[in-house]
Length: 492
Ligand SMILES: *Cc1c(COP(=O)(O)O)cnc(C)c1O
Image (cartoon, rainbow, N blue to C red; front, side):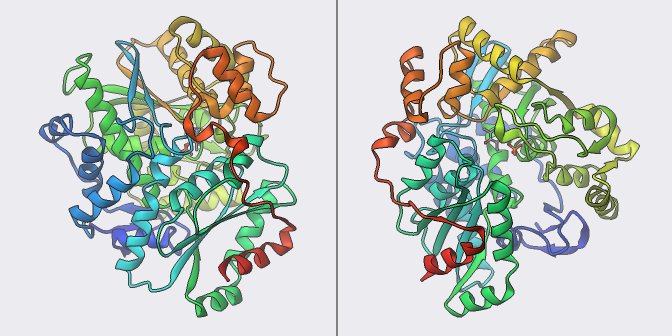
């Protein structure tokens, strides 16, 4: 199976090349030329497998240039005792029609682990298959969560190094401690004076510095990113939708073939797009419920067919969804229209006007499959408190946004089996969760973790326990202009 750019069907590459390159040269995203089908009998067979078996089976359909043995090796390395639940991505049922797919049992307690534990294996193998002999240095600018998940994914992976830059006073105490205590021989972390944009601009400048690229190429290195638009990050996410469906069937609450709605807390549109691919392959998915916070560009888009990012940016208590341009939406537009020129024209309009309106054809398919909804910070907190009060089940702010949108949706629609995708452990967002529960939260981040544990009786997840006692390895801070010197020092 080949892949091509959403903006140019004639630009075809193999799966390994798509993963090695990340982005197509025309700025488009790589998409598979066809979506592989899976039969009901094959889904039934998945029900008897464990998470790794399901993941190998689903991913192999997209990766013809990888052998089954190779894939099994990567999957077993990615999803093992680094997760604190043997099921890897368990479904917690609140009642017969509502399950919560917990994607936060990995090493950083957030769903990014599902992709970033797998990507390093896919990326290093893809580079080898493409004849790349140099070693790769991953550069990341982070506003918090992605940096840590990428560090955990790439730590001690052969022939790679990873260097993460974070804004000096722009991440939480817990996020900072998570990063500066990272173990591994090939990792580096540096603070940058300024905000996230400064860090991001600095990294972009390094990527576009041709002279620097030549310099490090001479000593056997090249730079790459662990960006969320890489196909190697999207693909591992398709697997957990199949896994969740199988768990629902195995629970006896639905029959094989019954449809299930999925509700996904959405930012860059990666997670929910993986659900769309699962549905296209043949998984019995009903509606895809796209949940947003006050940054409700997508809710408006699903309602009107107009994507308009010209609006104020809101900082919310579900910060990983504070996004105005959802990059992966481009893949959906292509997948529906199969018209590369049309998609290129939308993306051009987004760049120049900040908005575009999709065709009637796309609008029709979207309204048959998607439902958007959003919720305020106050409603998010109220839901956390309600859910905990009624069911004794504690969820984080991002998951709560999705639960609230489902609650609203069910007010006007029949209640059908639904799985809410849970993207972070509540311990990752202690201050908001504590305040939702009515507790005071004027303490340092690490104390809040213990406080939440005391007031709920839940154990602190191992990756967050005793953070303040771990060795702090990376204390450096630099000016934005000096980031390139930090990279040089790191590669020497
Ligand atoms: C990244 C993230 C999201 C958004 O996921 P997308 O794939 O970007 O839509 C939601 N919740 C949490 C906790 C995240 O870290």
